[in-house]
Amino acid sequence: MVHELKHSMLATQTADDLARQRFVLALKRQLTGRIRPGNRVIFESRVRPKLQARYRSRAVTDREKIKQALLADRSYQAWSALTRCSQEMLWATVTEPLMRDRARLETEAKRLRESPDRLGGLELDPGFAPPEAMCEHHVHLQPQGYAFMSSANDVLAGALYEAGGNLYSMGQGMRGDDSKAGAAIRWLREQQPQFTPRRILDLGCSAGASSVPYAQAFPAAEVHAVDIGAAMLRYAHARAEALGARVFFHQMDCAATRFPDGHFDLVVSHNLFHEISNETRRATLRESFRLLAPGGIVLHQDVAIQNARRTPFEQAERAWDVYFNDEPFWEDYADAQIARELVAAGFPSEAVREFPLAKINGPGHWFAVTARKPIHA
Amino acid sequence: MNRVEAVRAAIEYSTERRIAFFDDPDVDRVLGITMAVAQEIAAVGEKLDSLERLLVEAGVLRAGALAAYVAPPEVARERLDVHEAFVARLLRVVEQEIVALRGSDAGAAAVNDAAAVKDAVACNASAA
Picture 1 (cartoon, each protein chain N blue to C red):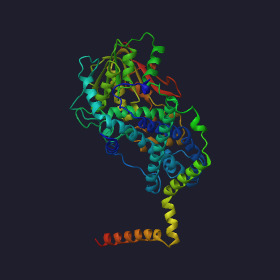
Picture 2 (tube, chains in turn purple, blue):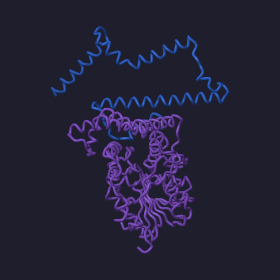
Picture 3 (cartoon, rainbow over the protein chains, first blue to last red):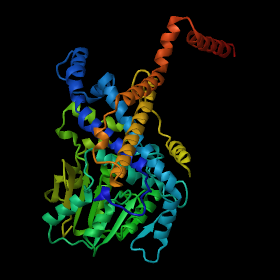
Picture 4 (cartoon, rainbow over the protein chains, first blue to last red):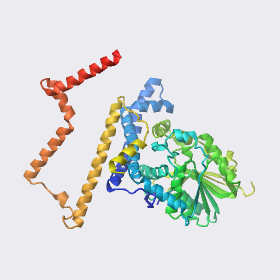
């Protein structure tokens, strides 16, 4: 129920705010569901014949040339401009109510953080410098970026991430009651009914939307979550407290945490890998292996955009987000062979499994990789 | 923070660069403005819908009465006038081009004046 949850860390919205958001949602659904499939028609009817003529070849396999040729097509330009515009509108629409409510949200977060009845915790590291890429690139075009912090009590990066992310996901066709962690927890319960983790780690937790369901599903377990931005984490912690969930948030690099070896029985990440470089992803997989106790389980979930089974046109068309939604690692992730990387990180190949993870209510599925650390490693 | 300040704060907080997808970046700008207008129309539509529902709840209107309302001839004429005035305002820039082409009145002078000012500015710039 991630996208429909109500809690005290959400901005107060007027009827006009909600109407504007519904408009953005309708616009995004139209662009994604009705107009975007037309890109294939544009390619087949206009772009492919042009490329074939220019390069005197029947096979058009170079995705870089396809990207260039698509961007020169007027209909593709129109879809691109409208899609970019819809993303800018999304942020403008959710930023406005947050600006009106900013002071209250900061006070509420502080109250929850300092409450004697708090359940979890927040550990910020003043010496921590977020990775340069996350400061330079404003992923999803989030204003000021994911890791931005303006003051000692700032929570805006997290509040924006949650409000914008919910609207974005629903614009992609996701249902309001979908939950990435919910899908992973259901899978774990089906596949490993005896598995009762004592300590759980959520890597790259953002606003904590996936951390909270683990605390709720495994109430006896201690749930920890790490991310890079102080304003993001301050929000995530307040949000978890407001929802009555016991989660301990830490400002750390997911590829090099400060937890001891073998500290966790379950290490997860949700939609993290498409936001980090190849190098960071491989280091994060090694870190997952180090952090797991013998017999522990790792489960990484992300979007199902793997290029291995896609045509050069599909790869080129999917890469739009790299350039125009400020997703620098989107294509690297789509090209990656993550199951192999898990083996390279130390997991025995027979313990590694890559599979489509069914969504709670569809449509479609997530990409997931999982592995169990041997009892005698 | 009042409502204008909130809009301005949101605008100032977002420093994302604009992207020009079309050959002429002015087209991208116009598209952005058009979509913002469309969003406001959608918001007005919701407000009317809320108003109708509240009136039905309060027993002032019967459900469906608004959709079933057929304007009597004098109201229909009045509405047509309102629409025509709206369309005239909307298409003012297009109409002014035609006025200028006729080359006979103030519209033409306005366009010519603007061209003369542009020339003068260009001269000054190159002289500096």
